[in-house]
Length: 273
Ligand SMILES: Nc1ncnc2c1ncn2[C@@H]1O[C@H](COP(=O)(O)OP(=O)(O)O)[C@@H](O)[C@H]1O
Ligand SMILES: [Mg+2]
Image 1: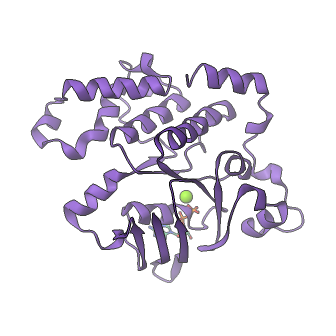
Image 2 (image 1 turned 90 degrees about the vertical axis):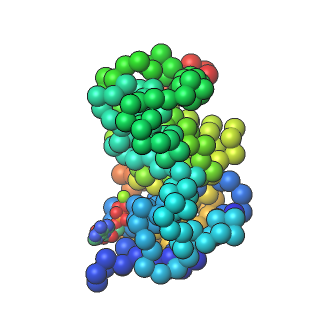
């Protein structure tokens, strides 16, 4: 499905991503981990074609993504939606309009200028918000929502594009443990129910272990680990993070696991029902 072959990105003398290769045979939920500066964001940006590779190729269902230009490149960008740490919503705009922005690249400039959306798109946007447990927030300004709610709006906006792949760059890095859990559960559910591939850069080990089928570890631009959460032992983690004997898993933990089960069940049943 997705094949990344010796993908490389250099910025002057610096190699941000160094001959990264991996392939994904079916829609999986993949976590990319590694310390700050390891090349995680650069990798994601190349997959989305926000950034051009210096060398190497990306194939999606046999098609060479690295070679796409103009309209074809934009079409790919809507097939692989991106979610960011800082949500990137329009703060003063209402939630539903933010979600409808996800349809932007298939609407005319004029319709966009006058904020004209087809009724069916509006209904669909509300449906998606409902699925994420935040339909009641639809008329509010984005800036009035909590961080966890805003990230779910960003996910809703991504879903509006009906993407085959969702790329999330540190989606929970600005959230408290409870909201982090809600957002990760939402991504997991979207992956499972819609069969969409999710690739998420995560700065914490426990999150990758808990929600992902597969974990890719990066260090100095290289992929140094690619395996299941079970294979991601403390020793392997120490190698990925380039830490010494004093390496502590707690240092890379969001403490999601410390939320008690009742909380977790309640969130699952309520917020995401
Ligand atoms: N636009 C850029 N110009 C120059 N160097 C960059 C740029 N983007 C990233 N880098 C460098 O590439 C390396 C990888 O960065 P990044 O992909 O952001 O890592 P991560 O997301 O894992 O923290 C870092 O050394 C960073 O300084
Ligand atoms: Mg980054």
